[in-house]
Length: 85
Image (cartoon, rainbow, N blue to C red; front, side, top):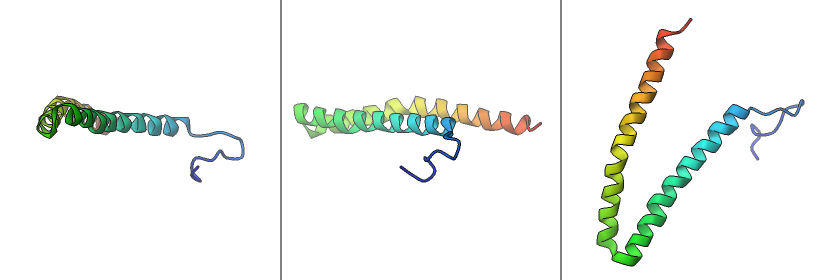
């Protein structure tokens, strides 16, 4: 447990930071499972060439997701800049 994760004197904790950290860890874990375990199983069953092709397919499938996320975060930054009230 980090010093930042410890509750303060009132026993409270920053739940938004905890939720953001948990969500990030879940997303990273899902990608690790998808790439390492998924491609490992493909390599065991069908060979290394099939796993390399599967890797290319996974990267190709990530392109629209990354573009949507970039647009989403860019729009968020733009709206925060406009609404500095």
